[in-house]
Length: 215
Ligand SMILES: Cc1ncc(CN)c(N)n1
Image 1 (cartoon, rainbow, N blue to C red):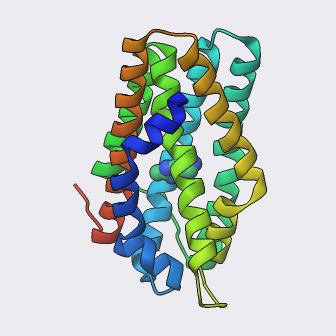
Image 2 (cartoon, rainbow, N blue to C red):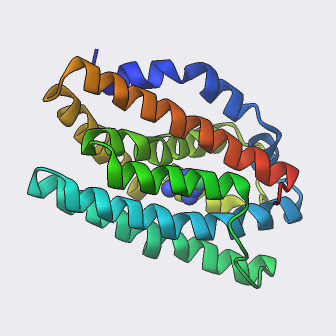
């Protein structure tokens, strides 16, 4: 079994909880209250900037030049491409400002940035992987199961269920598998632990948006 197969298995119950969350189910049906989606998008705007910075740090620390370049490009993708979705949503949904990072987002970005800076680079790569992989799985899940043909959140769904995003996800998984294979068993365990922690933080990000949790 590859490291990524093992890592995904370890979060399967959590992933099951994610796709059963009201935020995700209502996003799928197009019934998510706009105020909750606005909160989520404004937080995600801040998240993507810091996530992009964490990816760039990982790129700078990667051992191989191909991996370094891939992570720098992922960073650019988060800040430029994904954020373009937010900008268009801001126009459509009337979000006028990004605001402060609320607790769930604050916790998540600081976890990613400290891991990117201070933990072994393999662990840092594993910590950012759920940001790719869980979004891809959730995007595909919603795309496959949605019934309503007139969903106000369709562009969000299409971004994460789309092929462009899938290419980056496959590449991120492959890089994690190759660094995992080249390292020790105890480092692989630390990678899995980081993967699980970040997956939990993904859950809390959506949950806090649904409950509009502020400081
Ligand atoms: C919180 C979060 N995690 C992941 C993604 C997808 N890159 C995102 N947009 N926001």
